[in-house]
Length: 103
Image: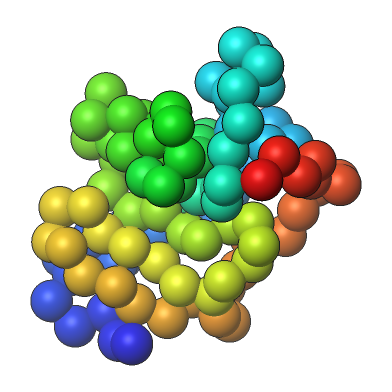
């Protein structure tokens, strides 16, 4: 997986996770399957296989293009704009505490 074809790779930031789980699901008491972290601002949202699809909703609301597979740590990034999957295994965002399991 390379970042070839992604025009946003240079914009990836080292970020601090915004929550110990999907922000919106934690507030509403909902469940998630996997987590994604925004590599622009650190927002933690749930994946598109989760009922809330909060990571995609965050992209749609903010335009922040790149997410990382966050929990479990998967070592990949995805650019919503360019629809490109790429390797982030050497730039994974560390957890800032234990992540509750809701799946």
